[in-house]
Amino acid sequence: MHFRIPALILAACFTSPLLAQELPNIIIVYADDLGYGDLSCYNPKAAYKTPRLDQMAAEGIRFTDAHSPCTICSPSRYGLYSGQQVHRTSRRCTAFEGPGGPSYIKPGEMTIADMVKKQGYRTGVFGKWHVGLTWYDKNGKKLGGGFKNSLLIDYEKSTPLEDGPNTKGFDESFITPNCPTTDPLYVYIDNGMVPVPASQRHKRDNVPNPGGKWRWDNDEGWMSPNYKFVDADLLFYDKTLQFITNHRKNRADKPFFVVFSTQIAHAPVLPAPEFDGKTKAGARGDFVYELDALTGRLLDAIKELGIDENTLIMFNADNGPETMHAVWMREDHQHDPAGGLRGVKRDAWEGGHRVPFIARWPGRIPTGQVTSQMTNTTDIFATVASVVGYTLPDDVAVDSYDMLPVMIGTQEDGDPVRPHMLTQSFRSEFQLRQGHWKYLDHKGSGGNSYAKGSLKKYAIPEAAPEATGQLYDLTADRGETKNLFFAESAKRRELQTLLAKLTAKGGRSAPTGREPLGMENIPKLK
Image 1 (cartoon, one colour):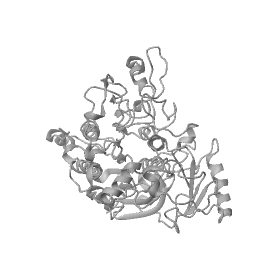
Image 2: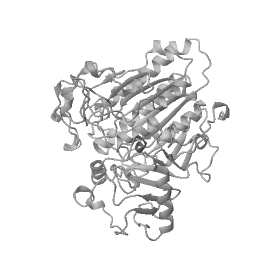
Image 3: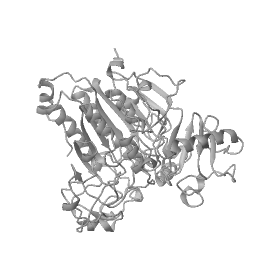
């Protein structure tokens, strides 16, 4: 049973006296392990269609050179909430599991939710959190990660969570601490509290195994009774919609900001029953179709509530497709989740971090735009600040650029917003883009091994085996096959010097003195 908008609530939304809402509502749909080739608007050869996201792109703007901050989820999510690369925390890239933490977000560090609250927004986040949380045992000792420590949690001492979303700028939250169906601890956290502690042992045999393999990476561990695996994203969608409809009923004079943090298409692949068989591309095709459908339902709800014209929706993903997902989709369905790019999740090559990014705002973003402007998930922070008219201090969101001029069509591709861009791979190593040049400050993929196993068939011989790094010209070599480390030594040294500057302690990659556009400078579409 899914949450629907009752007629009485809709009536209340439309008949309540409204004060003029000057700022737009803002929704972020954040996907998981979704590759550059996983949407049909990005990949004409996709083995299935994603009609609602294709529609969203046609009604707004689609970025073809958008990137996640990292090639795994937790650091990228930190980038979304902080506008910064995770190395600014002085910590390495990791994906939290068990009672892992503390949060990447430092005490007192401004988040995107903190920022919009200063401008009068009510804020919510629903779904996967995964930026680290602090848990205590019965003696008040902080617990480290790992599955066994889940049983040592003292929930009375640990909650309300000291570094959960409600301490990071969110008024309402309903989250899971880690990947909802992969990494125990399998519990729900409702506004900083755990209503039902983990007390049962999860056995993977209790969840479906479509195709005999798509249950892969469902770790056994401790869970709350009645925890949902197959219906996880339906639950997160329902919570998101409840937040929006309740807000419109009770606070219609104020704008809202909400993150719908899905777990599609993370392993294990568990499409809800209503989406089973909806595509001819197996379980993962059905799974991505579910994500498409839920985004479409959100778009429909916004229209039904009468706030479509004044709602900015952004769709983005935290990294490229999972290794075995890419292998199986290529083998079984002739579908390439990486969209022809080299690499997958964890890899520093483009397939590991080039991801879909779509924005739609009917009142302000012109339709049918496709841009090659280089952007990063970290840029959502400064872009939202520009929308809401908040001047960012120089020590906040230091890797965030304002992409709003691109979205509203006032800055063309020939005038790049970003002169450069940082990303990090699974092993915390750096990559640097400058225009069409890409420098990798390491050898190899930065993540997966291509020497043996399922990925061996995708190995490409190293063109400069003695090189300590990699340099590619993405215009001439989109597949990153020809390492120009020695052949273009002057450019390589230039980028090495720039990388050292941008990653230095106390450094930044975004400009200082950023000024927001503000609503008065965003043209209204006729």
